Amino acid sequence: MAKKYKIILDRNTCIGVYACVEADNKYWIKSDDWKVDLKDAKLNPQTGMYEIILEEGQFNPEAEKVCPVVAIKIVEVDEQGNEIQK
Image 1: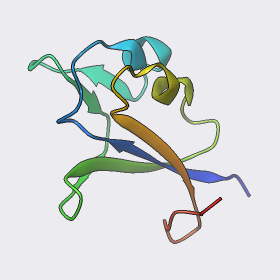
Image 2: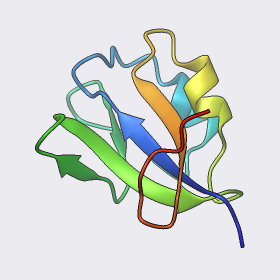
Image 3: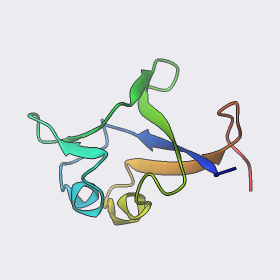
Image 4: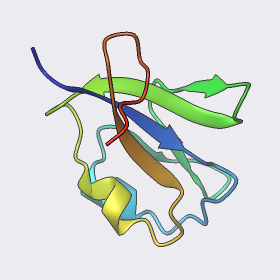
């Protein structure tokens, strides 16, 4: 079974450098307001963050590493979508 990961975008922190788009333009999309959108992500009303759960290999984790303002977080989750603490 493939590992699953929650991709989290803090859109308020994003400054529109678009390094994540360069790393993975399948899920990171330039928006009209000079920030990025995370394709198919849903807004979590409890955190105010946009989130999507994907399987390992569906996305490029480099997007998190190249974000200069740490607006992207990628965490491993279990089958129920709960974060796995390491």
